[in-house]
Length: 335
Image (cartoon, helix red, strand yellow):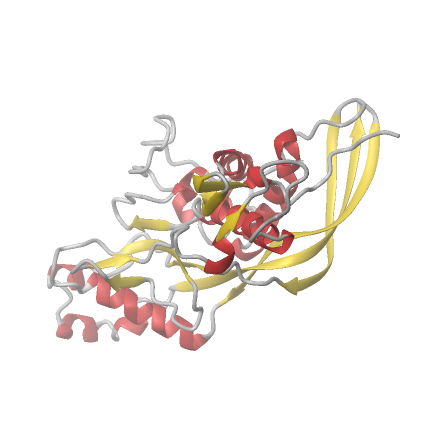
C-alpha cells in the first residue's frame, strides 16, 4: 500500500510548551509551525508536499482549522472608530494616524483596538498567554492622507474637525473585518505530474470549534508507550494544535502601520495580503519601513503599480489560511 501524507492534529510538534516532564503548559505555536505560516503567507501558495511518486494522485477528507471572515456590524465599526479617534487625539504624544491596525480579542462584542493598560493608549495585542481562540480584527482606511492637514496642524481642534464634517465623515473610508476560527470539513485532491504539484481544496461543511480553555492549557504528557494520558485527553491536544495554528497565522497579521511615513510593526507587509484590493495602498507605498525586520530589498522599494489584484481581503485571508493548513503537510514532523 502506498503511503501518502496525512493530517495529524494530535501531534505534539504543533505546540510550544513550557514546563518539565511530565507537566506542561501551552506556550504558543512551535517554531516549525510559525515558519510554515510565514513561508505560505510570503509565497501565497501551498508549499511543496512530497508525493510518493513523481506522478501520483490521491484525495484526503478530514476535519481541520479554517477561518471565516466578515465585515463587522455597524455597531462594531462605530466602536472601532471611536477607539481610533481616542488614539489619534491622545494628549500623551503627537502621533500620526494609523492607516492599518490589526488586533485580537477574546470577546468579539468588545472590539476595541486601543486600550490604556500602561498609562497610554496602545494597540491591543493578543498573546499565547490569553488562552482561547480569539477574534482577529483588521481595520484600515487606505487613503494616503487620511486626516486633512488643517486638522493635523490644529492638533485635532474641535472647530477644524467640525469644519470637515466631524470624525465619522473624515474617517468615512474606515473599513473593518473580523475573522474567527472554525472546525471545518476538508476535501482535498492532490495531483502530481512529473513532480508538478496541483492541489484543489473544497470545504463542504463548517461547524464552530470548542474554545481552547485555560484548563486545557495545562496537561500531563505520557512518558512511554504503555503510559496513560493522565490529566490529558485527545480533545485537549486537538484544541492546542488548532490554537497553535491560529496563533502562528494571526501573529503575521497583527500590528499597526502609520500613514504618511507608513512605518510598520506588522509582518503583513511581507505577505501577499498587500496585493489585495483593500490593502493595495500598502503595496504601492513608496517607502515602508518595517520595525520588526523587513528585508533590505523590501524597504525603500520603488513605487510600482500592482499588476494583478488577489481580490478582496476577506476572501484572500480565508484562502491563505486554507493554504497554510494544507502546507502543514510539507513537513514530515507534522504528519
